[in-house]
Length: 406
Image 1: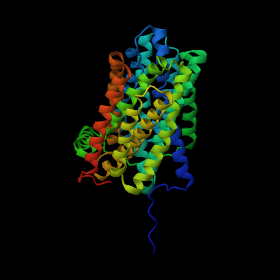
Image 2: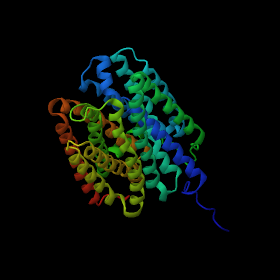
Image 3: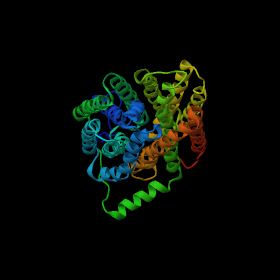
Image 4: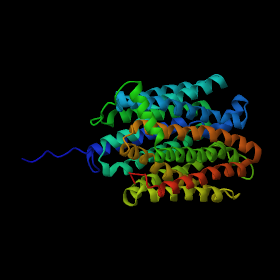
């Protein structure tokens, strides 16, 4: 009597696999479009509310801080209640809060709503990579994670281009409203396409079980390095993009908001590089690919110092390409490593994303101070230091004998 075939999850080429990938691609677009919707309109916010350039970066930093803190709760909650329910709730709530942000009457109200935006968004990134590991065939994990990160890259570009163009035509309020509408459309796509979890198994409940999983997630040296890689790399990217609008608005470029936001057209390179890095990681291993991405980002930062618009764009393109290689590989590596070490995949992913968004909040705000003190060279200096430390961590991961999942 033949044994029944073991269900190892949706494989590449099947209709279900395509539904998962398209749904999470759309969810990634919504997340980053909302998360960084104010980034292209920071100069407008400075004028509208009479605040400094450094203060405007709080509309990004507080959102990522709210997201990072909420992730510490969302991950364990999803281990008990399931994945897809939290995804739908998160996208719906985030779209509503984003619309309210467009109506904010005062600066404190806007900052409060931006913080709540991050909290509402936490349900998606907390479970996305865990869902992929559970529902897809093992040989597709790195590739699918790369495609999901590609969705976040496209969302980052689309949200910034959309808000930049709308702000120049109709003001920052309509710009934020347009990003809320985009997110709502993506939420509908996710609702229609994302298959319900089939292979999810609820984690044990209770404080002791949660504490045990937390200790495991924070005591694995390889996971700790991967968490740091995410935070430092994201900090470098956000430092640059929080201040790029101010640089392009000033001499020698003198660009308006709409024209300056075109620099975000480099983001499709992130979608491409994250998808290709996933395939490369499946073929040559994550250890080989991750350090190369960090080095490409360092090269891009150096190139961006040249006072030529085409050369600056090339530098930003290299930074985006390298960053999304790093993030695409690291974010997919975390659940693989966690599973190999008997750690909750959702909890490990939550800690990775906590440091990822903590890096965005801390270094994104420091970038405003760096701009005030030393303009673009100071920002590039800050981002370069962060990326060089990322390179060092990536190399140490490459040579770490303790990593079970390559």
